[in-house]
Length: 81
Image (cartoon, rainbow, N blue to C red; front, side, top):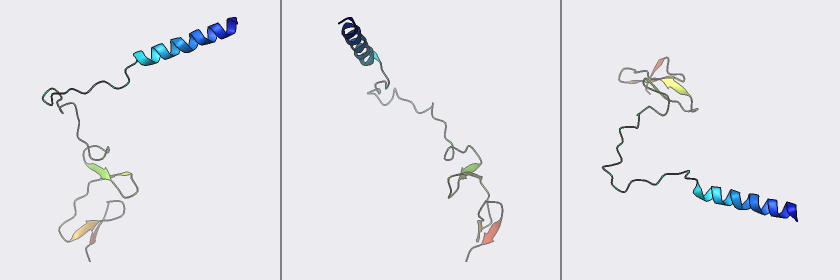
């Protein structure tokens, strides 16, 4: 009987603490109060000067002249067909 009482007390305590937690804060209703200045723009999570490749990896931005495109790893330029 003592084990049942302690178990019910532990379950009740767990349920009470679960309702008091705030994992997701309430969003502000006024759009002016929510500023986007805390957001740092990056190129797909790679940072400035880099972009995501077809396999999902970060590769450097490589600018080829008009009529050319970057190769598989962005290190060479190939003529457009």
